[in-house]
Length: 369
Image (cartoon, rainbow, N blue to C red; front, side, top):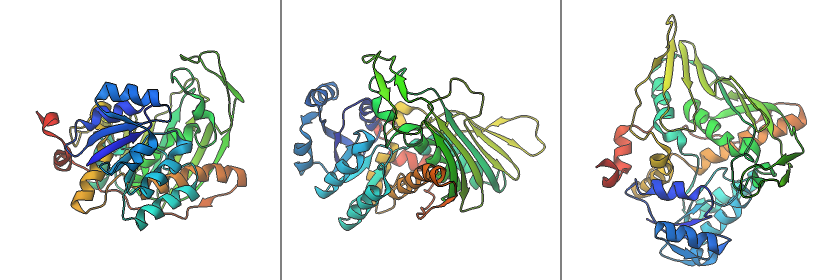
């Protein structure tokens, strides 16, 4: 399937490099609102540099990877669907539920597919936890904990302003990695509550090329939430750009017979550890497949979507999954403002696991040599 990228910023090289690993992905063109950036990326990876309208009008391009800033995700995706192309969005699916719903409805009307990052939940680490859960190694899931606590993007990212604007912040930017993994492991969320705040009204950029500039913060930068899953587990989640240091674990699943611990759910190959009842030590579980690096695995959700379209099955990193995660994330702020629990309107299916045999069907000869 011939693919075009819209948005040639910081994340695009990861897609372009990892796409080479998968047989089904043929990225042929790129576009950006800044033509010089598209031309530079095209020269780097041997692509055609197009204007956005040209890429959308090109009948040979069947799928658009939407790597624009979050505030533009819905608009670009809707334009691509209107042009008759499948869409794979960077996370989040959109910044509001109404736009996300329109996106999914248009795709359904046109019999097109919508996929959405992150695909890290399909990496070896989270999938190893999935197998452990499915095999009953920790018994019935009781609870979970997820935490991303940092001091923001302005110290390393070349263009950090958008992370502090409405439609971004730590929950919508980093939350999808953690919450998509939780939903993939435990199923859909039934209701949430939470609290949110903006700790600093301005942020000082120390990264190049904008060092010394100030960012006005217009979105919450510290969010703490509680989730009740439809299956019965209760989880806590915290995302922050306001924390200088922490010793909290990043990701754990608690069961009636033991605990699963993962260093980070947004990595592909970090160890998954298990400690069961009456055991005094943690054991490292064997990874269930070989996709263990970001450079290899970043496009696995996209590759699975393309393969699923050809095979007539559901793809794993689906628009429905991303919509449910988006509703969860937005509901934390809603709960904070209203001082109550928020019952979610959406549900989604827990994505099918992906093991070594499933992965091998997606990998190209180049990767397996």
